[in-house]
Image (cartoon, rainbow, N blue to C red):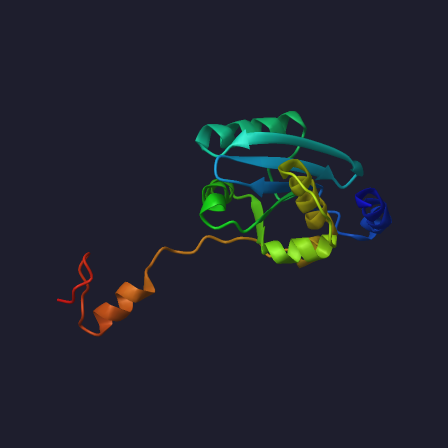
Length: 169
């Protein structure tokens, strides 16, 4: 069934943006992440690999992409589900390299793929890559936010300062 879905939108690719050429789907877990790449020139060709969820794994990930001739520029879209703290370090790493990162709500990806039973991390990464290809015109690129705690600022404006143990001074 997944093969049929892929074939149904391959014909539409010619009408889509020519700027994005590579779509990297990533399924994130606590200790590792799976990455799959779909190439717009040949959407049937998919490559997959699993990497450690740490700085060394991130470096190997970029090497792996380079070996497969995946450009690390604005022609490649990195897409992943928002997994909270598990995806944060990878998002920070990729945005630090000025790459296009799309962090999508898991429910949107699941709804776009239809109901399917039984999935693994590899298949999830592939589905996310195809989701990015199909929905690229709806991509919302991740932008880092300046780190300021609103709570602290609001309390200071009111003349109240909270200590580390929660008591007011």
